[in-house]
Image 1 (cartoon, one colour):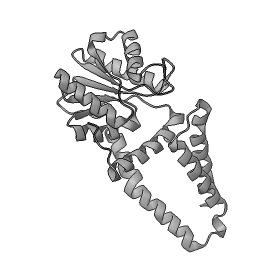
Image 2 (spheres, rainbow, N blue to C red; image 1 turned 180 degrees about the vertical axis):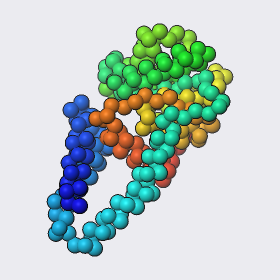
Image 3 (spheres, one colour; image 1 turned 180 degrees about the horizontal axis):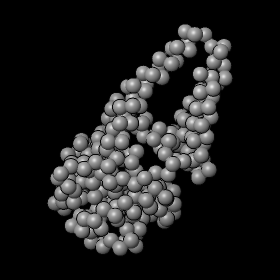
Image 4 (tube, one colour; image 1 turned 135 degrees about the horizontal axis):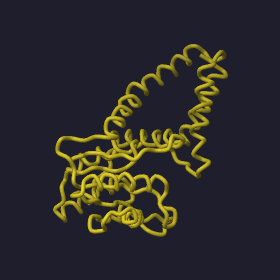
Length: 245
Protein backbone atom coordinates (compact mmCIF):
# COMPACT_ATOMS: atom_id res chain seq x y z
CA UNK A 1 0.00 0.00 0.00
CA UNK A 2 2.82 2.39 0.87
CA UNK A 3 4.54 1.77 -2.47
CA UNK A 4 1.27 2.27 -4.40
CA UNK A 5 0.45 5.55 -2.65
CA UNK A 6 3.96 6.96 -3.09
CA UNK A 7 4.21 5.91 -6.73
CA UNK A 8 0.76 7.22 -7.64
CA UNK A 9 1.35 10.42 -5.69
CA UNK A 10 4.59 11.19 -7.50
CA UNK A 11 3.08 10.39 -10.93
CA UNK A 12 0.11 12.66 -10.27
CA UNK A 13 2.33 15.42 -8.88
CA UNK A 14 4.47 15.43 -12.03
CA UNK A 15 1.34 15.39 -14.22
CA UNK A 16 -0.14 18.39 -12.40
CA UNK A 17 3.19 20.24 -12.42
CA UNK A 18 3.78 19.72 -16.16
CA UNK A 19 1.41 22.51 -17.34
CA UNK A 20 3.41 25.06 -15.33
CA UNK A 21 6.14 24.76 -17.98
CA UNK A 22 3.65 26.32 -20.44
CA UNK A 23 2.53 28.98 -17.96
CA UNK A 24 -0.74 27.19 -17.20
CA UNK A 25 -1.84 27.51 -13.59
CA UNK A 26 -5.42 27.31 -12.42
CA UNK A 27 -7.55 25.77 -9.69
CA UNK A 28 -7.19 22.37 -11.42
CA UNK A 29 -3.46 21.93 -11.02
CA UNK A 30 -3.43 23.90 -7.75
CA UNK A 31 -5.83 21.39 -6.20
CA UNK A 32 -4.05 18.51 -7.90
CA UNK A 33 -0.64 19.54 -6.58
CA UNK A 34 -2.00 19.83 -3.03
CA UNK A 35 -3.78 16.48 -3.32
CA UNK A 36 -0.70 14.76 -4.76
CA UNK A 37 1.54 16.08 -1.98
CA UNK A 38 -0.98 14.91 0.64
CA UNK A 39 -1.04 11.47 -1.00
CA UNK A 40 2.76 11.29 -0.88
CA UNK A 41 2.82 12.33 2.77
CA UNK A 42 0.03 9.87 3.58
CA UNK A 43 1.98 7.09 1.89
CA UNK A 44 5.25 8.05 3.56
CA UNK A 45 3.74 8.06 7.07
CA UNK A 46 1.19 5.32 6.38
CA UNK A 47 2.66 2.95 8.95
CA UNK A 48 2.40 5.57 11.71
CA UNK A 49 -1.15 6.75 11.04
CA UNK A 50 -3.84 5.39 13.40
CA UNK A 51 -5.95 2.70 11.75
CA UNK A 52 -9.25 4.49 12.40
CA UNK A 53 -8.08 7.70 10.71
CA UNK A 54 -6.53 5.74 7.85
CA UNK A 55 -9.73 3.85 7.09
CA UNK A 56 -11.74 7.04 7.45
CA UNK A 57 -9.62 8.65 4.72
CA UNK A 58 -9.99 5.61 2.46
CA UNK A 59 -13.77 5.64 2.99
CA UNK A 60 -13.99 9.34 2.16
CA UNK A 61 -11.95 8.90 -1.03
CA UNK A 62 -14.07 5.91 -2.07
CA UNK A 63 -17.26 7.93 -1.57
CA UNK A 64 -15.90 10.84 -3.63
CA UNK A 65 -14.99 8.42 -6.42
CA UNK A 66 -18.38 6.71 -6.33
CA UNK A 67 -20.55 9.83 -6.02
CA UNK A 68 -18.64 12.45 -8.02
CA UNK A 69 -15.60 11.33 -10.01
CA UNK A 70 -16.90 8.16 -11.69
CA UNK A 71 -20.44 9.36 -12.61
CA UNK A 72 -19.30 12.76 -13.87
CA UNK A 73 -16.36 11.22 -15.74
CA UNK A 74 -18.82 8.86 -17.46
CA UNK A 75 -20.80 11.88 -18.67
CA UNK A 76 -17.63 13.69 -19.75
CA UNK A 77 -16.84 10.74 -22.00
CA UNK A 78 -20.45 10.23 -23.15
CA UNK A 79 -20.95 13.82 -24.29
CA UNK A 80 -17.48 14.49 -25.72
CA UNK A 81 -18.69 13.17 -29.10
CA UNK A 82 -22.48 13.12 -28.94
CA UNK A 83 -24.89 13.11 -31.86
CA UNK A 84 -28.56 12.32 -32.42
CA UNK A 85 -30.40 11.42 -35.60
CA UNK A 86 -31.54 15.04 -35.96
CA UNK A 87 -28.16 16.38 -37.05
CA UNK A 88 -27.04 19.95 -36.39
CA UNK A 89 -26.72 22.91 -38.76
CA UNK A 90 -25.65 25.50 -36.18
CA UNK A 91 -22.15 25.28 -34.77
CA UNK A 92 -21.22 27.11 -31.57
CA UNK A 93 -17.48 27.42 -31.06
CA UNK A 94 -16.61 28.24 -27.46
CA UNK A 95 -13.85 30.76 -26.93
CA UNK A 96 -10.52 30.29 -25.20
CA UNK A 97 -7.50 32.46 -24.44
CA UNK A 98 -6.03 34.77 -27.10
CA UNK A 99 -2.38 35.73 -26.75
CA UNK A 100 -2.50 39.30 -28.04
CA UNK A 101 -4.03 38.63 -31.44
CA UNK A 102 -2.79 35.02 -31.73
CA UNK A 103 -5.00 32.08 -30.69
CA UNK A 104 -3.81 29.86 -27.88
CA UNK A 105 -3.25 26.23 -28.83
CA UNK A 106 -6.64 25.21 -27.44
CA UNK A 107 -8.44 27.98 -29.33
CA UNK A 108 -6.64 27.12 -32.56
CA UNK A 109 -7.52 23.44 -32.13
CA UNK A 110 -11.18 24.36 -31.59
CA UNK A 111 -11.10 26.36 -34.82
CA UNK A 112 -9.61 23.35 -36.65
CA UNK A 113 -12.40 21.12 -35.33
CA UNK A 114 -15.02 23.72 -36.34
CA UNK A 115 -13.54 24.05 -39.83
CA UNK A 116 -13.61 20.28 -40.19
CA UNK A 117 -17.31 20.15 -39.30
CA UNK A 118 -18.20 23.12 -41.51
CA UNK A 119 -16.39 21.59 -44.49
CA UNK A 120 -18.24 18.30 -43.96
CA UNK A 121 -21.58 20.13 -43.59
CA UNK A 122 -21.67 22.90 -46.23
CA UNK A 123 -25.10 24.15 -45.15
CA UNK A 124 -24.01 24.68 -41.55
CA UNK A 125 -23.14 28.07 -40.05
CA UNK A 126 -21.07 28.88 -36.97
CA UNK A 127 -21.41 31.23 -34.02
CA UNK A 128 -18.01 32.20 -32.65
CA UNK A 129 -18.50 32.91 -28.98
CA UNK A 130 -16.01 34.72 -26.76
CA UNK A 131 -15.44 38.23 -25.48
CA UNK A 132 -12.22 40.17 -25.00
CA UNK A 133 -10.25 39.71 -21.79
CA UNK A 134 -8.15 42.43 -20.20
CA UNK A 135 -4.99 40.73 -21.47
CA UNK A 136 -6.30 40.14 -25.01
CA UNK A 137 -5.80 42.61 -27.89
CA UNK A 138 -8.91 41.39 -29.73
CA UNK A 139 -11.99 39.40 -28.76
CA UNK A 140 -11.87 35.62 -28.90
CA UNK A 141 -14.71 35.78 -31.44
CA UNK A 142 -12.68 38.05 -33.73
CA UNK A 143 -9.64 35.82 -33.38
CA UNK A 144 -11.69 32.77 -34.32
CA UNK A 145 -13.12 34.57 -37.35
CA UNK A 146 -9.58 35.43 -38.47
CA UNK A 147 -8.42 31.83 -38.09
CA UNK A 148 -11.46 30.26 -39.75
CA UNK A 149 -11.40 32.58 -42.76
CA UNK A 150 -7.67 31.79 -43.13
CA UNK A 151 -8.71 28.13 -43.15
CA UNK A 152 -11.02 28.82 -46.08
CA UNK A 153 -14.39 29.19 -44.32
CA UNK A 154 -16.52 31.88 -45.96
CA UNK A 155 -17.13 34.85 -43.66
CA UNK A 156 -20.83 34.83 -44.56
CA UNK A 157 -21.18 31.56 -42.62
CA UNK A 158 -19.80 33.06 -39.41
CA UNK A 159 -21.60 35.00 -36.67
CA UNK A 160 -19.61 36.70 -33.91
CA UNK A 161 -20.75 36.75 -30.29
CA UNK A 162 -18.15 38.91 -28.55
CA UNK A 163 -19.72 39.84 -25.20
CA UNK A 164 -19.53 36.60 -23.21
CA UNK A 165 -17.09 36.06 -20.36
CA UNK A 166 -17.89 32.48 -19.32
CA UNK A 167 -19.45 29.28 -20.64
CA UNK A 168 -22.98 30.07 -19.47
CA UNK A 169 -22.83 33.39 -21.33
CA UNK A 170 -21.30 31.67 -24.38
CA UNK A 171 -24.35 29.45 -24.68
CA UNK A 172 -27.01 31.97 -23.64
CA UNK A 173 -25.76 34.81 -25.86
CA UNK A 174 -25.32 32.41 -28.79
CA UNK A 175 -28.91 31.30 -28.20
CA UNK A 176 -30.04 34.92 -28.72
CA UNK A 177 -28.14 35.10 -32.03
CA UNK A 178 -29.85 31.86 -33.08
CA UNK A 179 -33.26 33.31 -32.23
CA UNK A 180 -32.61 36.67 -33.90
CA UNK A 181 -31.41 35.08 -37.14
CA UNK A 182 -33.81 32.16 -37.32
CA UNK A 183 -31.03 29.58 -37.10
CA UNK A 184 -31.52 25.95 -36.18
CA UNK A 185 -31.69 25.19 -32.46
CA UNK A 186 -30.03 21.83 -33.18
CA UNK A 187 -26.52 22.91 -32.26
CA UNK A 188 -23.13 21.26 -32.26
CA UNK A 189 -20.80 22.58 -29.59
CA UNK A 190 -17.12 22.73 -30.50
CA UNK A 191 -14.83 22.81 -27.49
CA UNK A 192 -12.37 20.52 -25.72
CA UNK A 193 -13.61 17.06 -24.77
CA UNK A 194 -13.53 17.78 -21.03
CA UNK A 195 -15.74 20.86 -21.55
CA UNK A 196 -18.60 19.35 -23.56
CA UNK A 197 -20.68 17.96 -20.68
CA UNK A 198 -20.94 21.30 -18.88
CA UNK A 199 -21.83 22.95 -22.21
CA UNK A 200 -24.64 20.40 -22.55
CA UNK A 201 -26.01 21.36 -19.13
CA UNK A 202 -26.22 24.98 -20.29
CA UNK A 203 -27.73 24.06 -23.68
CA UNK A 204 -30.49 22.15 -21.89
CA UNK A 205 -31.25 25.19 -19.76
CA UNK A 206 -31.60 27.63 -22.68
CA UNK A 207 -33.56 25.28 -24.96
CA UNK A 208 -30.86 24.23 -27.44
CA UNK A 209 -30.59 20.62 -28.64
CA UNK A 210 -27.05 19.50 -27.92
CA UNK A 211 -24.57 17.73 -30.17
CA UNK A 212 -20.80 17.85 -29.86
CA UNK A 213 -17.71 17.78 -32.01
CA UNK A 214 -14.72 18.07 -29.71
CA UNK A 215 -11.13 19.12 -30.11
CA UNK A 216 -8.66 16.99 -28.19
CA UNK A 217 -6.49 18.26 -25.37
CA UNK A 218 -2.75 17.78 -24.97
CA UNK A 219 -2.00 14.85 -22.67
CA UNK A 220 0.21 16.88 -20.34
CA UNK A 221 -2.52 19.47 -19.69
CA UNK A 222 -5.53 17.13 -19.71
CA UNK A 223 -5.54 16.19 -16.02
CA UNK A 224 -5.31 19.83 -14.92
CA UNK A 225 -8.29 20.90 -17.03
CA UNK A 226 -10.19 17.71 -16.23
CA UNK A 227 -9.86 18.43 -12.50
CA UNK A 228 -10.94 22.04 -12.96
CA UNK A 229 -13.90 20.90 -15.03
CA UNK A 230 -15.01 18.41 -12.37
CA UNK A 231 -15.12 21.27 -9.87
CA UNK A 232 -17.14 23.35 -12.34
CA UNK A 233 -19.64 20.53 -12.88
CA UNK A 234 -20.08 19.98 -9.14
CA UNK A 235 -20.64 23.72 -8.72
CA UNK A 236 -23.30 23.72 -11.46
CA UNK A 237 -25.18 20.86 -9.83
CA UNK A 238 -25.07 22.47 -6.38
CA UNK A 239 -25.24 26.17 -7.31
CA UNK A 240 -26.53 26.48 -10.90
CA UNK A 241 -25.46 29.58 -12.81
CA UNK A 242 -28.18 32.09 -13.58
CA UNK A 243 -29.13 32.40 -17.24
CA UNK A 244 -28.11 35.96 -18.21
CA UNK A 245 -30.84 38.29 -19.44
